[in-house]
Length: 290
Length: 262
Image 1 (cartoon, rainbow over the protein chains, first blue to last red):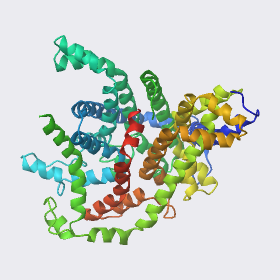
Image 2: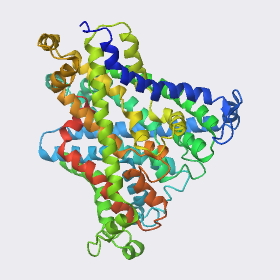
Image 3: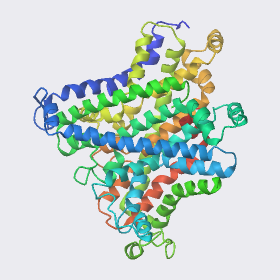
Image 4: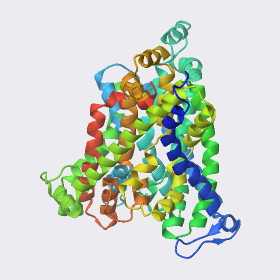
């Protein structure tokens, strides 16, 4: 439609665009610029070229952070997707009982990360924790879930899976409900068992949904911070220093704006690649909210 | 079989909550001596009293809710006119404007926090409500979703309103907004829940107590050395979780629809 006055569209968009520029566009540019300086927020910044990047590369720190974060993400994506899909299939039934179970699983997605992280820190406590008691009960050895470098990253991934599986389940449920029942009936009439029906009818129709869940949970897990900050502070021995926590550490603990900015730039580039994949999956999935 | 598996799934998610509540009702000697005893000896609310005495729960809660409501309201108030312009009006530069909105969808707070913190520090806004609210006052996702919803609203409604002499503001807020109610309710709820729970942004934008939010207060309670006094931490956890769980119970359909995309 024609606007009533030529300035109308810009008056309507103005506040939004201004805020987006100030809080999204400018910060990205600023981070790229500041990554070329050494600055401790106290003395004046000093131009150092690509030194921040070089320093991060030299000790292999950057690759360790990227690798660790991607490894964490892989565990979370695989866990949340397989569990979410299994629960969606299990709970895609009528009745109040199944509705209640769906609500129970999804509720973890609504509760604060802080509450979830603190609750699991307590449950995973090697002495007073209920999980440790269960381990003792079945004769398993004492495990320092949050203090042993072998177990700590899988432990954080498991907590994250517990938190976001409800989300994956809900999206898979909406995908399952768009599978035409006639197709499944026709396949059943042709003699296809439940596994064959899933493999040849449901799954192909569910693929765009699965791609969507995969990319969103990949991005969420790649941005993980709260579980790290609350449960391990990056330890033991940096075993859980994930990307965002590394940035946080650089700026607020090491007071190194330059290195934090360099990390931010790399983080953004990797995330951008992942997010582009997400948008593509989103478009493939068609319309839909959030 | 199916029922048993579903019950196991329910237990896997409900048992941790139950454990949180049960722990919060225990006393210190119980936590120390028999931490994994299933039930407390008697239900003791001492842990809740200690939480209220250690942190200003009411003030943190009020700050958190005020912040989340402000953010959600501003996002909707700004997304409506912006979405309207992008969905319904013809003008030069529209593609660029829409492209900018889409580009911002790809930039999360984890990328912007270092420069935004430094910007806000420069203008003295750290430790203010503005630092918590302004960076989220506009939601690229909100604009995008309002635009998508408006595309399917027929132009005739707008033409008729214009003939009746309604101003553009009236058309946007009084005539079109009611058509978008399901979208707006979803947006509000998702935004409210996200920001009520948010730990990251308040953590990096505050250095003192002035506008501390509840998630931050609860996490700090643990950091300041509760040691083995887990019953206190769990009591704080219950206080933090009850409002969102209540909201979830009330508005489960809308929240699930917003996430499931139907």
